[in-house]
Image 1 (cartoon, rainbow, N blue to C red):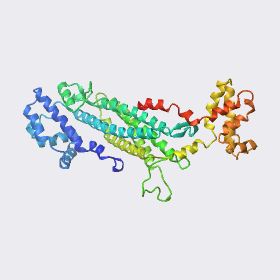
Image 2 (cartoon, helix red, strand yellow):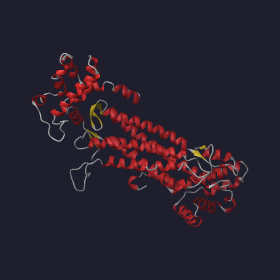
Image 3 (cartoon, rainbow, N blue to C red):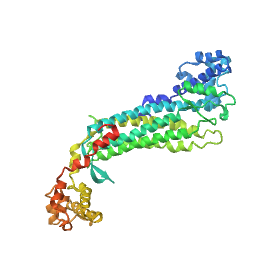
Image 4 (cartoon, rainbow, N blue to C red):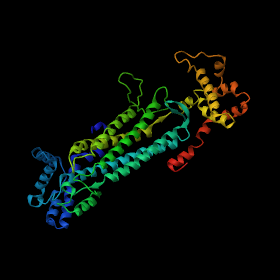
Length: 465
């Protein structure tokens, strides 16, 4: 939780003042419930609220810390300071029948639900930015790549739509994870309710906007927390997924998109020409931090018997670190997407860079639909596609030397669609396919062929065409 990667709204959730405020409310609501049940005097419950319900100022927090130096127990230090505020006579009824985990676990779950609400807000910002950019670039053609190599055309809008759908799934997972973590345990030592009525738990849960934990063994079952942090890890990976795509598009030799570069911004202390993808590189790093919380959270599930505290030190670190980091990352990502600069002219140039080679599958299917076996059609198209590569000086049979161009290779340079040129010269197609039919196929608008179902995809993703 360093300020560089933190937003105050999220860090406030994990500050001592908020934690102790939640602890107080848990104790005070428990007193109210006990008073209604006749376990403690109503006057004592009233006194807790009237005298203890004060802001947790730096002075109060310092006093709790001072007491903990002696007690070596944070909850006892808290209740001791509260007794100083309320008075010993009424404070003796505070924490009646409860154990420390009742306070600690219920508080942690409140904090995690508060954090989840902020994270959901961050995801909504990302989703809104992705939707806007998807609509804006819906039919903007760009080269799709598999294994980093030119494959077939797609659109920039489909890239954004894909990420939108991914974050929609992530949001749904987080909603479920929030519901799963929003439980309250006020069940006393080893979770048997021997010293406290289950109705107290039900009362506190309602007041804290939680649900009663069906069965707790003095601690809330940690599979809930494991699921929560695993969800954060998946969302962080989605953040990185977008960041990696932007970083690739910003590479100098690609330059199909780039992060906004502000006036006065510097890219390098040594090289004044640099315009580096620092924000998305940063997001890649932050995603690693969030994911690093997942394995410890999974390991926290297995505790000794009815409880131990091997999970405690872990959660005191990963709770703040994972939520603060992901909150910052989501808000940064939303800004990056909203301000992303795209270069359609570079996309178009890359589309036409290799002589129509991206229509190889289209030709393959045409041949199979016109009587050529798939095996023969594949050999024919691959043979001519390799000739296209060679005509650009890329010889797959001689990778260590420049390709030796023949007259046909040099002639191909005068044609925009080199794939069709080589196919039209292929003796293996003579008498099999009418060259005019093949030429008509490749004369059609290639981009429209590849984008004809974009509306259908958008309707699936956004519910609109």
